[in-house]
Length: 162
Image 1: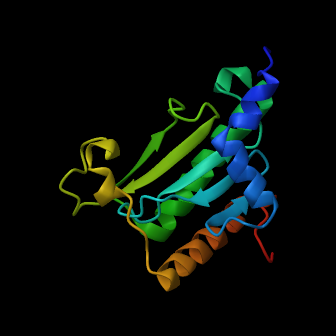
Image 2: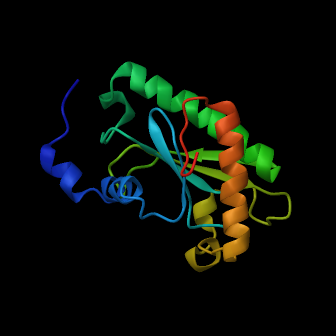
């Protein structure tokens, strides 16, 4: 497996977020899973949108050890199931792009019937509409519900205070 250049991790925004999670300084942290960290995303127009950040810095999933790559995909399936249990979407969307941040991460977007663009990619919606925040009480309640569902599905998951 080719190694990632050492300076890539120093410049990586996702590695910086993981550092904040480890320091207890990331408010939208949901849970630590065996192969990833799960955070609430910043585009809560899609209520329940989450991002899974691979623990290993790799720019491509095929550059990860095979067992870690498979574990990440298994976690994504269980996280999607947990999000769907909380939000009851019309459809779940999954995206692993890496064009802006070259660190394997998955965007998990619940899509809803009342979204007039529900059959289009989420990125079609203007950023100022997409990137909405939830009122703090609602955000905390959503994170709590997602944590409960994650912990019920992934026995090795850890969450703050658990």
